[in-house]
Amino acid sequence: MAVKLLAFSGSTRAGSLNQALLDLAVAEARDRGAEVTSIHLKDFDLPLYDADLERTAYPQGARDLRALFLTHHGFLIASPEYNGSISGVLKNAIDWASRPFEDQPATIIAGFRGKVAGIMGASISPFGGLRGVTHLRQILGTIQTVVATEQVLIPAAATAFDENGKLKEALPAQLLGVMAARVIELAEKLSPPTA
Ligand SMILES: Cc1cc2nc3c(=O)[nH]c(=O)nc-3n(C[C@H](O)[C@H](O)[C@H](O)COP(=O)(O)O)c2cc1C
Image 1: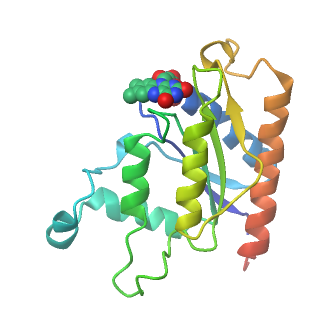
Image 2 (image 1 turned 90 degrees about the vertical axis):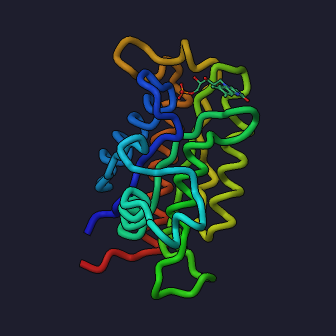
C-alpha cells in the first residue's frame, strides 16, 4: 500500500502562490509513489470554530475534513504568512480537524497523532513566509504530528514561478523533491503500510 498524503493550502484565493507551490510538492510526492489527495479548504463547510456549534450542530464539512486527516499517513501543507503567522483559514481548519472523536480520549488527537507533515510557504516578502511556517511547525508539533525538518520557503514569490507554474530557481525546486521524499520515508516508518 502506498503512503497516503493529504495536501492543502492555507490560501483559498484564485491564483494563490501557495497553491502553486503545493501543486509542485504534490507532483514530487506522486513521482515518488505517494498517493496524494489534494483538497481545497474552500470546498468544506468550515464556520469559525465554536464549541457550542460543535456540541449542537457539528458542521458536516468539519466532520468530513477530520475524517480525511484520519485516513491519511501524512500531510503536505502550504501556508501563506498573514501578519507574521499562518492564515485564519488554515488555523480554523486545523482546529476543527484536531477535535477528538467521540470514542477517543482527548489526549489522543487521532487525525494528527503519528502523522508526518511536509510544510512550505510562499510569500511576496524577502523572508518567504518563514514566520508563518515556523508557527505552523509549532502548531503541528503541539498536536502530535512529526514535521519533516526539510521545509521549503519561496521569497519574492510573485516572480518565482515561470509561465508553466514551475519554480525558476533550481535549489528550491530540488528541495521540494527532497522534502517530499523525507515525508514519505518518515510516514513509512511511523505508519508501516499494512497491505
Ligand atoms: C492579511 C494579510 C497579511 C499579510 N501579512 C504578511 C506577512 O506578515 N508576511 C508576508 O510575508 N506577507 C504577508 N502578506 C502577503 C502575502 O504573503 C501575500 O498576499 C501572498 O501572496 C499570500 O499567499 P497566496 O498568494 O498563496 O494567497 C499578507 C497578506 C494578507 C492578505
